[in-house]
Length: 352
Ligand code: KG4
Ligand code: ZN
Image 1 (cartoon, rainbow, N blue to C red):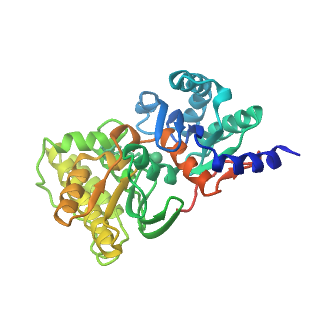
Image 2 (spheres, rainbow, N blue to C red):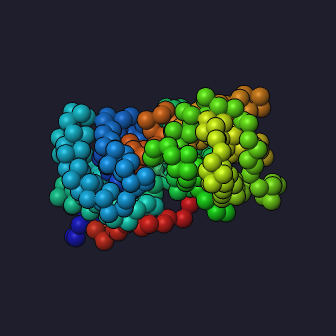
């Protein structure tokens, strides 16, 4: 029997095993992360090595630099994750890895590390989509949360509303027709000369400002669940450039606040409406922009008024981390999905 044939048998056996311990690897962007997760909900360790300080001086992630730093970090992060979990590599039942979406070179580091580890330990390898991981961040944050629910997915690469019917089955009911919302937060922050990553900086600065400027989201998609944020992003960028050309003062906090108000209003209105129409009574936010304090405040208030239960991941599981990948892998395993062979490769884009 070759490796994959043996793994098909082990994978099936794991579906019935009482306690399943998965080591997971995430390297899709600028965080090198390894976690150990038990039964999809219990995080035994979650080590995240952020490269933010390295990329900050370039004003954004430099893909080649990210890949090289993942290579340097990954072995140590792996050792640390096992140590913190108090386990040996021989206690692991499976290895999970983000295979996409993300930066191809960065992903390849995690994928190859995970493949070598799974092969050397003769245990199954589970290939996880990054977006699925972001949803699963809620399962480790809220122990009793179960599908079905409506999910607002907001990250640096995605903006979508999903109908999550079961742990491994989703239906896309709306998505951005242009930029992802995280991307717009980062671009607006950049024009305001705030450090990378811009989202948390806008969040912070907006608290000191007022919604004094009129920046609005296009009305064209008003009756759908789709989003368009490139118009408001360009409006803010042009406004700031015009003011600079005329040597006129701007109030950065007011700009941050006005932009954030318009964007979070649009996200909140559509997500809550989708949740009401789909009738599941539960709204879950996922992805890095889910860390935005104003977005969470608006969603939480709107849900309270409409008797919808609202869930957001705890802050450390909102942005990229491996624990969410280990959780997603467990639910995939339970559904008999995700078993990968040694020809697994990274994908820059993965459909939702
Ligand atoms: O999910 P994530 O860590 O990576 C991707 O999968 O893309 O999301 C990163 C994005 C970045 O655009 C970052 O600026 C944004 O999430 N972000 C925030 C906040 N924290 C992170 N955006 C707005 N407010 C925040 N507090
Ligand atoms: Zn992410």
